[in-house]
Image (cartoon, rainbow, N blue to C red; front, side, top):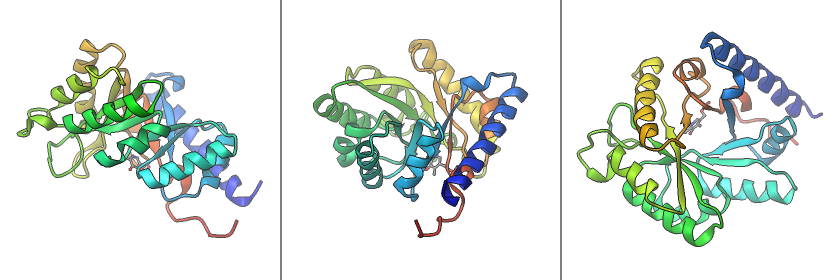
Length: 242
Ligand SMILES: *Cc1c(COP(=O)(O)O)cnc(C)c1O
């Protein structure tokens, strides 16, 4: 193993233990929560190393980078699930639907419509999507908003648009805790949204919440997927030596 692989193995085992402890503290089974390793800005070699360590879910936030890594990973004969977690522009939908297994960041009616159109034309199977929910209602940042001034950003409207699109499957919700909020409060609010959506859409069971800094609070509030970047990949860029 290279020292980079050893470092990733160590970080990963620490985060798996951390997740197990968080699940135990919340009275949940560790098997209920999936770790998504967010590999943005890190090389495809790290994706391959993580896959070899049993990580099957990889997150990325920019299409150009994600598309290249997905292609290189497939070329290496390695299969992982790709999660698109970043803000998505409508003109990137066509590309994203060709490699993504789940898009976490659907936050407007026009985006849902563009994604559905692209998925219909450029995929064989429906695309799993999550509604990204804004916790603080700040329209300048990502996320659909409960009681939005703009009807195209309203959570209910985005949910309905996705649910009405045969090329998309509504699988749940995603959020990023706002900086000024207590993560526990933010994720409790997300849990409420997840619950009313699930009442109408029983397959919408995914709650994508929690990052390196707030995994415990997210797990305690019912997260099914945590998105870990720095905690696994490191907070600095790795040395450029192979
Ligand atoms: C980068 C990123 C993460 C991972 O963040 P860390 O703090 O490095 O764990 C999670 N979610 C999204 C949407 C991201 O862009």
